Length: 316
Image (cartoon, rainbow, N blue to C red; front, side):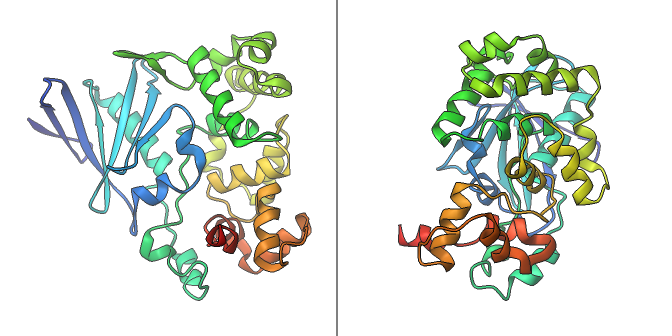
């Protein structure tokens, strides 16, 4: 059965196992490639994301504002994305899921200015053809900020573990698959305590930062989500991010990229490694060299860095 809701075609059907599926399609500004977004960085490896590499599909476990926890599945559909859930949603719930998918995949992003200047750079020349340029992000800036803080001063495997523990211990379970959980809302995290975050979730020194952030957002003292569409100049937005405990220069630059602001390069040990191999014959470099390498890209320096085809990776 098909119906028209908010200009989107909604299909209600049953799969081979008799499970009701609600499905609709969202358009994207071309060029669009869901596989390219999935591969854009390691976020897809962090709960509650999951992906099927063979089918090039992405899923996310979300807790709706109305309470239910649902698995949102995304698959490429021509120039857009098919969205499906295995539970019926009312109009407001479907609108919430749609808005979150649009944000997560950057469906409304116009990257034509970036593509125009990238065409002249061999290390970026394939970006437009491959639909590269969008960066996978979480539905909320709160979740992305927590995850970014958990990438600092640690290895990637530890980040994966910390996020998984945070989600499984404090997030609401998915009905029908209690092994999967939604990312904990600010109120859920704020109700925890530093000892739990240190000992059970094992966040280490990051525990008080995460707890302070959750409590500030839950109380309304910090409007993180308002920053997603704020027209503040990028330097001022960066100052707001740096004011969050646990967010330093790297974390702020990383969050700016996720916000669609590319004026800064997220410089960490990895950035210094790849830049040293790209332009300095493997000799040690610092922040200044990394920033200088991408200074010519101006407002797109962070995006150019993100999607650069590194010689270090090719040689490896």
